[in-house]
Length: 184
Figure 1 (cartoon, one colour):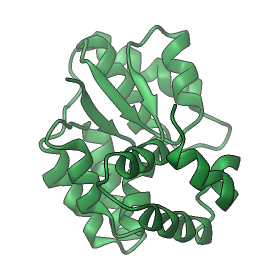
Figure 2 (cartoon, helix red, strand yellow):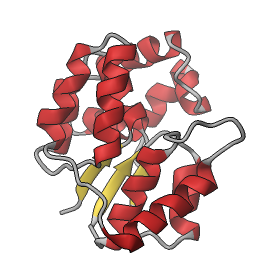
Figure 3 (spheres, helix red, strand yellow):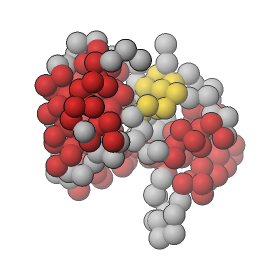
């Protein structure tokens, strides 16, 4: 059974919606994260005033720390791929570290990230990981009856209000409900 690795964006989304317990229920103890994501979680919890976001430490446990030259080189390569002009030195470190650790350690995993470049990088760099979004997790929660469609709609409204919804099928309420409930 794969381990679930989060990106910081996903943690912010669930914390903004006051749904960290739902996130814990969804990963069901099969979760891990990296040191950079854990550090970003601490920083973002403070920046966004989201103390419940710190529940991620209980959900995801002791973070994995990169070690060895190969992991560090992979992190540097991934980060260079994601980096845009003006990005700070820690920008994209969480995604890069997660991909490198999953790849170098051959961890069977699912990476939950809303960064649209991550799945492309994983495929082009032959990282064996399945990438999904916050919304795929929300859909799973509805389909497995861990939350209601109304809860999913409430999460959508909160995140729309924070301008954190970029997928067209989520932005449109009718399409979103149909997508939540349709067979894939």
